[in-house]
Length: 147
Image (cartoon, rainbow, N blue to C red; front, side, top):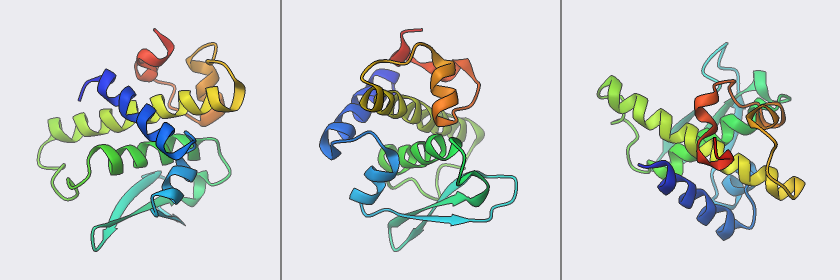
């Protein structure tokens, strides 16, 4: 899926649920969020109970800004890749592509959350990184920041 399509999807989601907060969106979608010990990794994952997604977040990030990026990433899997559970690990390319889509979804959604909370775009990717615990990978900054 293109970055533009992902950005449009996050705009639709934020408009529909009147927020870009991934935790609030999950609540409005009746997606259960459980904090569990997952060791050093993963920071989050999704399991399904009778087709109902459950987001499991690592307790190690509960009080960290990283909880926002991780939740937005998992929400991206749930919204953008519905129905692919159990199938996306068929090969490395597919897995990487779906992870990249979830990352792009998270960056786009959190940029919108930043605007919602601050009334302006972030000055740079680092500002998003500090606020929402995004990875320090500049390639994730996509078209939201125009870089």
